[in-house]
Length: 338
Image (cartoon, rainbow, N blue to C red; front, top):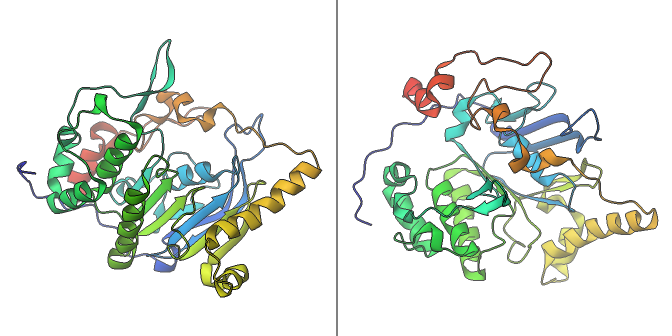
């Protein structure tokens, strides 16, 4: 690409933190509507060190997406400060916005009256002009991602297939170097070659730059030797097992047997026990409420996504404090720290 480049501003500095706890969740219980719904997550604890690659495994409805949203700062977690990312409050510290990236499947979707939720963005805009300033701030990284993902910068968004849109999402959200990456089923539309190249690239990001990655997926092809850690989230919303994959007995057994799909076998081993137990006791998946879908969230409540001081549904409601980031958004925060 021949677009003009501009040197990126220095990102806000992260103070020294305990690198054995790049992500730390302590005694987390969360419900989308505590008044009417049982908790989605119960007494949950999670610790991941810097440079770890964690596969988040769980059945549909177990709360994987909810956990990733909480770690990404999309929802307020209680007790206060129970989720720490890079030693900072996951929800309240805006510095994390420049070091943490969260990718989910509803990127590029919007709500359209009389059409419904999840309508693809149909703007007639080329890929090269999407977040153009951000792309041009990291030209080498941008060009590497464009080559790896097979993206034509002149693609126009209203003409793209689901798989092409997913690749554009990956470009936009991975072009800025990250310390924390949260992936929620974002590889479902990718072809097998692009997916394998992406997994190798993410592994290099973890090994070479010390990035910490949490990846929730139901597709286990090519993941047998990718993860360093596993976290099994039960249908009850709590931890069934967590730790380094080399500490898991069944993994060593499958490896000794030269099993062709070790991660698939491990997931099936855990989830089938749950499935058979639930079938025997006629137990159905729990609904998580309308707020489990981000398109249903009232935009007046989150005040523009990650901005600090956003309104929170409490009684009485909290008010914005007039901080610099409240007035100027992330630009104000970045200028403050640069």
